[in-house]
Image (cartoon, rainbow, N blue to C red; front, side, top):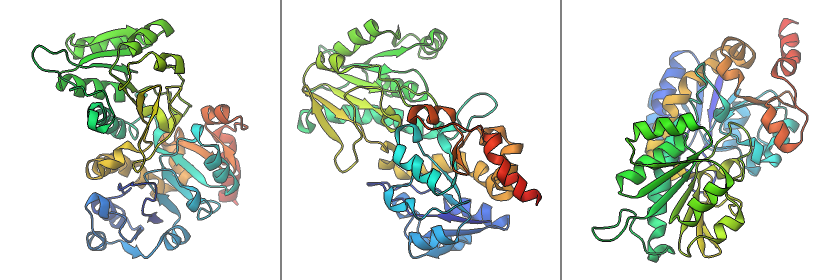
Length: 379
């Protein structure tokens, strides 16, 4: 198969979907890899390194998309890339379709085989391709929050860990999954007072044990969230329902009770956000204020640390990308249920139920959407 690696074009997105080492794995198995010029530069990989690994270098995205049977990306296609996708082409990337109807309809219209990193689920129920970026984003959320709590950056002038005689800042993490756990660990490491809110009591019990009682845990309900948010200096939104739109657990009324100069970092923003006042922002224009509360809602946070993020992501995606290239989508999903759970759009149909529900689009089970392709293969 010919595999294309275009340069990411989302605002200040410097990650790349494949490293030179990954290219070597594909080439060793007889595949052709086309990398757009400078695609890896932001992550510290030169065109020469890709060529040395066996890749062909293309001068622009048009060549990459036109010649490739599979497109491997990091972030979802932007509007300028929609019409570069063609019927039957395999797209493997983060998609977050439940919060992006325009992209979903473009994938339907162009009859793309769209497999989303964030919904690939392994036998243990984990999300192996979402986990590395959730780890990065969770750790970054505290780093970013501490930065914006400084008065020179618009915040209330607080040091996250305080000093002797002065209390540490109060960090509230909404959601105790991978993002929330990593955020809590980072905040504790900086000396903050940390509260984690989650609806799963067993998860809270686990976090209390592994974090050795250094965090406060709260069962998720409207009253507990309201009280925790009111006292918070930094709120981190870390709620995830895989593939679905994030629930709005922090209301605008709750935000209005926060002290001016407090900070919100909504890591769930690429799935619509779990805070009512959150709206997507970019690295070029990352913050805004609501009721005196600073909001940071960048949809591609890990893009700010591309070297770390690219290496972490490619470690996780390479195995699955090779499966798709070796077998094609139909055979790969038949053999690997994890990949089957990643298929969001196929043959003009939405095959992930949570996306269909969020966008009020007809849902088609994957087995049904696969039938035309299987019939064509038999013919």
